[in-house]
Structures are given as structure tokens and as C-alpha cells.
Amino acid sequence: MKINKNLIISSSLANQNELIGNLDERINALNTDATSQENSDSQSEHHSAGTLELVDALNSELAFAVKETEYLKTLDSSSENTHISSGAVVITDQLIFFIGISSEKIEIDGNEIISISTKAPIYASMKGLKKGETFTYNEMSYEIKDIY
Image (cartoon, rainbow, N blue to C red; front, side, top):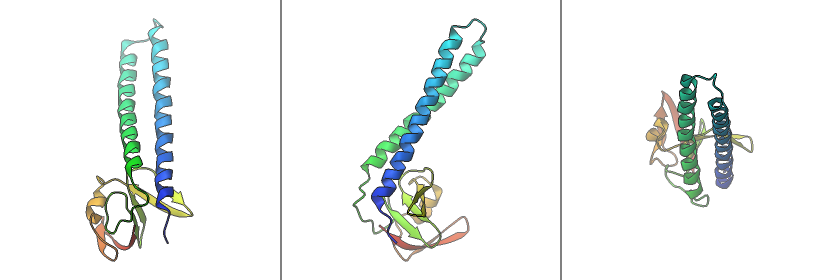
């Protein structure tokens, strides 16, 4: 069972673009709200400070999401990985992983794919392994059926 890597990357990019759009909307709404509150004498300074902190946090999330999106765009969907590394699709007896960025699960052709980054703890357990090898994470054993 080979799942088209290009579809996986495209789905991940679509999820990231949706996340970026949602963050943009939220930031714009908070900025609009903060601007209207500044024009109102009845608003407290405390509320404005809290809004600014939230906008800063959302801006940090947005910057991270943009960075991850740019990283996804660098992955070559035509490359065939023989060991577990960035950009690989890893099919195990338990789950299917895509080594890219940590994001929501992706479903393609009825297959659920878990997208993880190279910073994920489970990645450390599987990094560099090849087809036929096994790894254990959280007391669960995984046999690698295919890598590409």
C-alpha cells in the first residue's frame, strides 16, 4: 500500500494554510476590538494589556505556522527514502507516519496518516531505521513495513 506522498504534502499544506487563515482572522478581530476599545473611555488598561498579550501569542503561533509551511514546501515528494528521515512516509503494523511537521491527522484514501516533526519524541525512537526493523515508543512496539 503506497499512499501518494504528494497528496500527503498537499494535504499538510492545506491544513497549514487553513491554520494560518484562522490565526490571521483571530489576530485581525482582536486588533479591531482593541482599536475600538481604545476609543471607548469605559475600557480598562488591564483588558487592553491582556488583549495585547494574546495578540503577541497568536503572532508567535502564526510565525511558527508560516515557518512550518515554508519547510513543507521544501520537501521533495518524488524522493524515495530508504531509512526514516525527514520527508519519509513510514508504514508500520500499527500506524502510518509522515515525517514532516507536527499537525492534524491526515486522511487519504481511507488511510489515517500521523504527521510528526523530527522534534517529536516518537521520531527519536525511529530515526534512521529501515524497512523490517522495529522500534518501541510508550511501551508499544512498531514493525516498519515500508518506507518511501
